[in-house]
Image (cartoon, rainbow, N blue to C red):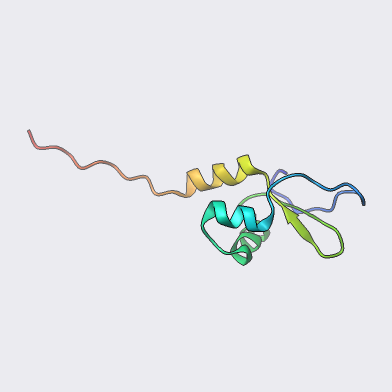
Length: 78
């Protein structure tokens, strides 16, 4: 799905996560998922007259992994 929003040929329904499924995975609202896709944080496919979005699970999981803060364990005193 490669970081872009586009419309596949009519009748071709892309597979992938719905907006609600992506939102649940990310722990945010559906509106936030759509906003982030429009900003280019991860790719999406948009199709149909209603502009339905689909998201690639692997791309959403990769976004989630790189967005999590990396916390170092505290140094231990000998």
